[in-house]
Image (cartoon, rainbow, N blue to C red; front, side):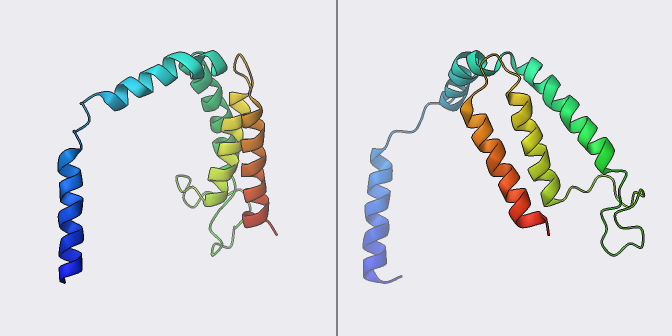
Amino acid sequence: MNKNDQTLMDELRSIADECPPRPLGKCLDEAKSVICGERQDTYGKPEDSFKIIAQYWSIYLKNRSNLCQDEGCPNYGYPHVCNPYELLPEDIAHMMILFKMARTQGQSPSRDNYVDLCGYAAIAADRFSD
C-alpha cells in the first residue's frame, strides 16, 4: 500500500470512528412504521394481499409447469415436465406482473402499480420474446 492509500485508509477509519453505531432494531422500527402505516393504508392487510398473490402465482405455476422449459428436450414447449421447480427469468417477469396485478386489488390501487406492471411487461417483451 502506498503512502496516499494509507492516508486515505486512515482518514476513512477516523470518519468511521466518529460515526455512532446504529441502535439495534432501527431497521425493524422503520419496517414497522411502513407496513403498519402507509403500505397497509394503500394495500390493505398483508395477509389479504399475500392470499391474492398466492392465488395468482399458483395458477401461473400450475399452468407453466405443464410445458417443457428445456430447450434441449425434444418435448420443448409441449406438455411435459423436465424440471417443474426451475424458474426462468421470464417466469419472474410474469410473476412480478401478477404481483402488481394483485396489488391493484388493495384498498387504494396506486398508479405506481400500473407503471411497475408496464415496466415488467416491457422487460418481458424486450428480453424474452421474439
